Image (cartoon, rainbow, N blue to C red; front, side, top):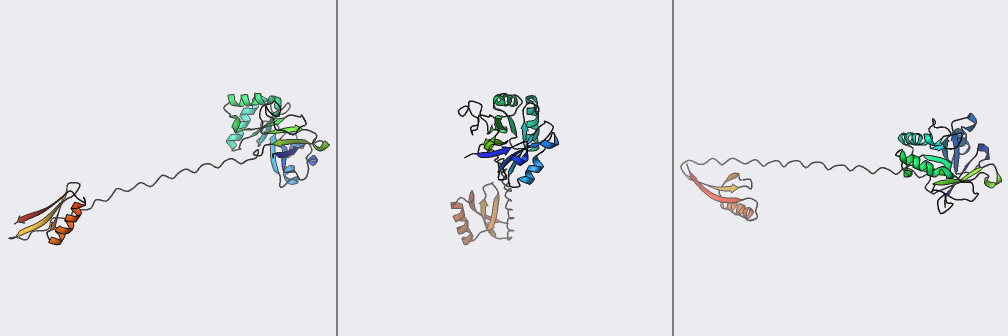
Amino acid sequence: MGLVMYDSTNIGDIPRDAAYVLAYVGGNPAFTQVPAARKRFPKARILGLAVASRYDAEGVDVEKGDVPNALVPGWVKRQLERGVHRPVVYTSAANVATIVKLLASNGVLRSQVRILSAHYNYKKHVCSPNACGYPTADGTQWTNRSGGHHLDESFLLDDFFAAAPKPKPVPVPPKPTPAPTPTPVPPKPAPTPGVVNRYLRITDKDGSDTYLPYTKLARLRRGIQFSRGKFNGLAVVNEKV
């Protein structure tokens, strides 16, 4: 489908129903258009284009009399640091390859910027080797007399104004499992003097012994547990004091 964006040195030339509008930032007061564009087109998506490298904006105008090629990498990096998602570089189709190479040599990837090329062949298109022979752009200003008026018109890819992808949530590390609390070993029952005392000696998996008063029921229960591997040893101990 594509998106249609208009711009003009005279804001009044742009159709009232424009959904996407390019407006200049900085320079001669007559070219500071963003406030007027926002007022005239309250529902439109406004793309601010800086006409000098000292101005911050979403895009930069790279052509004679505005921003030279050499200042583009620094301007782009500054906008990226400000949080601008894929700053726009507007330049002639013939200058796109030079700009992309210059950005790459300064550590800026092609995917980090949007290229808005100017190619007045008066055919609606987005520049690419197949479409017109020029390097691939994200949008192209293809005419300066849209509808027969003093009006620039650009054709943009559908995702030209796509928002920055949301960062992936950082997984929360699982809470550490607390170390098991050791079960206290009950003391050996006090023997009854003058008689034979009988105990059940249970040897736990850690080698510790636990003594319990001997009863047939206790012997039966502990025997079942021993057969199921609950502990390592079970014995009957007779002791006289």
